[in-house]
Image 1: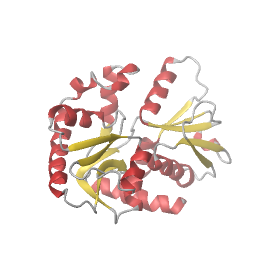
Image 2: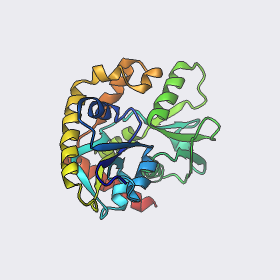
Image 3: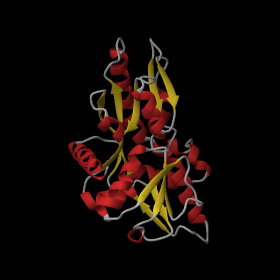
Image 4: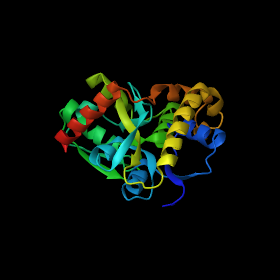
Length: 266
């Protein structure tokens, strides 16, 4: 870990692209080192002290509350459809009892949410097998997250034949069942950072300003989003409008309920 710079995790997904785009293009980042990785990799790096701060799976924080502090007013959440945590199935979800389904290893939070939905909300006994990259060869149903989910959804929209004719948005199911936002990720910082307090304060200020700027410039930022390789700018904007970057009392209630439910289904 760098002794004189703040080491910051960077999720390479469209969901947080607007904030990082603004940070890297409109702010002085000379004192920050950005390290890119999927959520599960960033979780591990943060836990092992290779990162100082990161947007990280909410599950990582819940499992290690003594290790981290939350940066207030920031999350990656949804109140309803999230658009990029998608469960593709050949059968209705109600008919999956006794089957094996597959889930991406990129997000531990999404896997935990899938287990809650299957067991607690639908009362199903389903084995969830975590693999590196689920695809159409992965049996009856599979979960994709992030840009992989967005791309697969785009493929299905363009196809006249879709083997997986049932597509479930996990954010939508959670909100329908609980009436609360689902917090997929939090911005968290390690508590044991020494000598970087000033940098953390500066980054927290920059992050808040970057979020505000990004949310006001989404049409401009959409032109530069990597997912425009398979999504139109209108589709990208519609996706971003489903996301919620706040962390209100309501979000914290949703986070606490998720913590309770995931312990019950473990």
